[in-house]
Image (cartoon, rainbow, N blue to C red; front, top):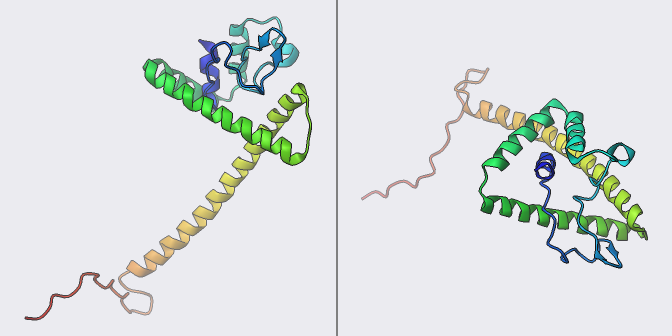
Length: 186
């Protein structure tokens, strides 16, 4: 129950794949593929998570959330509980596709950087890459919002001037010309 709820804050956590369906990139032990433990970067909290039950870890993570994130989590959890099984399966499928897209992006970044990493380094790289991407995306959103705001203000000023009945010189603003074609004279 808890493993489905916590990732609803940012990215829905896909369910573990059926046995034997792990991707080749995931670690494999001599006994076979390792079971999926959750999204990369969210597999553990180091020493703090050891010896705790899943419920204790969940509560600790929930306590770390900001009030806004906690409220969003609650809303997402309520929506999840109301979903039908088909809807949940579709959401899981989309989450799986998104995780695969992210994995490919990280693999491409590692290749572009010319790095050769072992499994642990790869996991840390993936976590740091996501953190940096999140910062970049947030910065770009803020910049875009500023640009949008300035452009909307300019457009409003232009429209205000265009639709103001009289300008300061006492002249009336030109009325828009109709776009309909005139009726031909008989």
